[in-house]
Image 1 (tube, rainbow, N blue to C red):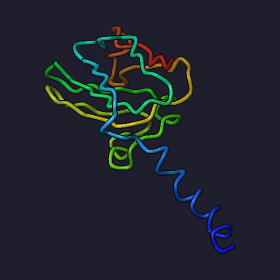
Image 2: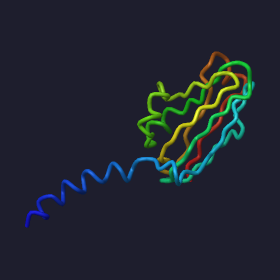
Image 3: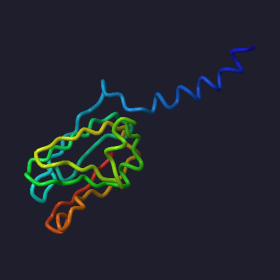
Length: 130
């Protein structure tokens, strides 16, 4: 009888652990940020999969990976959540930033660099969750 009373508590405590990104089984998706472009510009990730989003800035100046709707819908690893500010990840010149997350529902999520004029010069794309 006591087990029945603890069952709801066990399920509640286990659920967040199941939703957290698992770095051991993560799919690495690498995106290069350079002078006014993302490569690839259409970033594809599978729905519900644990992903290591590796952002590599090959340029001298800073860029960011701004996809507010994507990051808001994804389950981001707690250790990486502080790297996302207002839906964007800053990547310094010649720097690399890894964000561990579980991809959200299937859909199209806009992507851009919000540094002045970068999007106007072509630094736009999308995160496509299949």
